[in-house]
Each structure stands twice: as structure tokens, then as C-alpha cells.
Amino acid sequence: MASWLKARQTKYAAYATVYILVAIAIVTVANVLADRYNKTYDATSNKRYSLSDQTAKIVKGLKQDANITYFNQTKEFREGKDLLDQYANLSHKVHVKYVDPDKNPEVAREAGIRSLGTAVVQIGAKHEEAKSMTEEGVTGAFIRGLKGAVRTVCFASGSGEKQIDDSDREGFSQFKELMGKDNYQTKTVDLLQNAEVPGDCTVLVLAGPTRNYEQPEVDAIKKYVEAGGRAFFMLDPPLKLARSTVADNDAFTSLLQSWGVSMDKDIILDLNPIGQIAGVGPQVALVTHYASQPIVNEMKGTATGFPLARSMEIKNTDKTSVEKLFDSSSSSFATSNLSSPEVNVRDPKNKKGPLTIAAAGTYKTGKENSDGRFVVIGSSGWAANRFLGFNGNDDLALNAVNWLSSDEDLISIRPKPQDDRRITMTQGQLSLVRATSQFVLPLVVVIAGVGVWWKRR
Image (cartoon, rainbow, N blue to C red):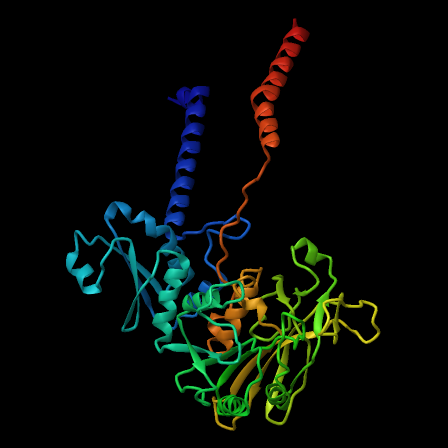
């Protein structure tokens, strides 16, 4: 017996058994941990398979349990599991349940499910159906469940402002669609016909008026903000070109000046060479550095662009507190020559950058939790259809509306679309690639093999 225990084969068998048991134990523990703690690493450049900062902020900030019920056939649960499990991993307050409508028709009927592949988010007594099985759809259901009350963004019309139903390059239809994803309703109001901001307007937007506001309109806006209302002003330079004329709107700018924002009658040109790389000209002011105000605090490292922008000067007043959002680059300058398309770069009258382009302020009403808020940006083209998709412009637009409507928890960077990494080649380049892969590389391998064989021989 002693000799058997000391035998080499016995020792090898014991070692092998121990190694196998250790390996099995490691694999078992790893599987148990993987099943209990679902951790993944997203190596894609734009984090395509990770939830956005906005979603993480909303889910991690939950004060009560949120139940997500996914309705689909059992064999198709995987279609929603990859996405919904990410929500559950963000917070222990999120619970996901999978229901097969064929096996539990009464549950699906009670939830009002009309099609398979649908998720319903329950927060408290509110049930909200996700409009799509995407992050935007599911997070939108969370937002609706948390916010409850309808928030309406009103766009002024009647003085040449950009319109939310206009799908042309200069229209705001994409801005309207973007706000809908954050559960905002939109409508148009004509302050000229009825010089009063409707009471259901959560935010009033004045986007690039080209004609002068009449005094009753200005008075209505003043009364609205100073009573605790929220307003978003986008004012273009008062150009006086043959095909592009924008009114000075002195009554309107005087109102802003009384709140501490003085709009300069100029246009900013940016000579930053990065603009050429980004495919824009000097008429687009590029911004890459931001202040610490909540609207832009999380936009570090994100570029935004502002075509045909004007500068402004800001200061606090007895009733208002005004903060700068961002400046143009140090390579920019502003010219007051607004009647000619030709600009003298060396004109000593030009103001050198950086120049303030945007500001946000609060108006002290004297009542608790009822201060007015306003955001002023010296351009409207940055939020138009043709430019809203430029880098972080869409994030800035929604962040401004979120801050104005006191929805600071929604301020973040939204999900980005998948990177388009397709390679476009000419016919000659395609022929070269085909010849290289089908003939040249195999020939090199054959020649190398023959060379090795010949050398060994």
C-alpha cells in the first residue's frame, strides 16, 4: 500500500485530480458570480452597447421601485433581455419581469398590450408603455412615469421666427421631434394676436425673429418671465444684406438689457482651422470650452457650432443673476459690418475673441421657488434642421429646455447613433484590393513556402 502511494503514477493522478478540482471550483465560482453580477465592457468608440449618462442619472436617482414588464413569446425574450438587464444593473430599485402573452393572456390584457415585443414601466401607480424597444423608448417611459404632468414648450410666431412644423433646412421640425423624446409637447403661439403668454406654456421659445416685436408683445414676455415664467431667446445678428435682412428689434433687446444681457450688433467670424476639418466655414463659431452652469456642465469635450452668431455682454442686476454659458474661440473676432458680405479681417474696429455667445439667468420674483429663468443665445441657426445634428448641438438644445423647465435631472448627453465606418472606394481602388487579396498575397505565401522548402532541401 505504501509503495502504491509513493508510486510516480499515483502522484501524477493526485496532482491531476487536484488541478481538475481547482479548475472546476474556479469555473463554478466564476459562473455563480457572472450569474449574480452581470458586468460587461463596451469597447465600441461611441459606447453603442452601453446606456447613456442621461439614462444612468435617471435610473440611479430613483426614489421608489420601478418595475419593467416585457411582453413577448418565451423564445423571443432574448430580444429585450440584453437591453432591460442593463437597467436592472444600474439600480437595485429596477425589477424586470418577462411575460408570455400566450401563456398569461390575462396579464397582457390588463396591461393593454396590443403587440409582442412591448415593455411597460411601472413607477408607483403610473404605467407607461415604451414607444420602442430602444434606450430612448424605455428611458422615455421612465421620464413619463416620473414627471407625470404634461410639459408644453411654446414657440412664438408672427415676427418671422423659425417654426416647428417647417421641415426645410432652416425649420425646427427636428427640434420638435427631439423634444418629443423627452416627453415635451410643443405648440405655436402668436403673441401679436394675443399679447399674453398662455398659462400652459412651461417654456416660451423665441427662435430667430426677423421682424421687430411690437411693444405689447415685449410687455407680455416681460410679464411672463418676471412672474416666474421660463423663456429661451435665440437672436440672430441684425444683418442688412440684400437677401437677408434681420430687424434690430430694439424694444426686445432693451428688455434683455434690463435683465443684464446686452446684445451686440455684430457677427462673429471664427478663423480656427479646426472649422475647416469639421467642414464648416468662418461664419460658424466653434465652441469646445464651457462654463460650469448646469446646462453645459456635462458637455466637456463636446463641440458645438453656431452659424451667424452675435456676441453679448452680461452682468447681474438687482433682480437678475446672469451666468455665461460659453465663449467663442480665441481665434475668433466680431465685426460690426452687417451690410456687406466682405469683411476686413484687419479692421482695427473688430473685437477680438473670445466673445460671449450664450448666457443663462434667473429673475428673482420674491416668491419662494418661483423665480423666472431665461436663456439667451446669439444665434438661431444652430438649432435648425440643417445644423441641429452637428456634434453636441442637440444635447445643448435639450439641456437648455430641461434647465428652463426645472428638469435638471434630464440634463446629460443623449445616446449617439451608431458610427458609420463604411469605406467608400473608387472602382480602381476596388480592383486593387481584389487583385491584392486574390492574387498578390497568395502568391507571396507560395513563394515564401517554396523558398523555405528550397533552403531546407
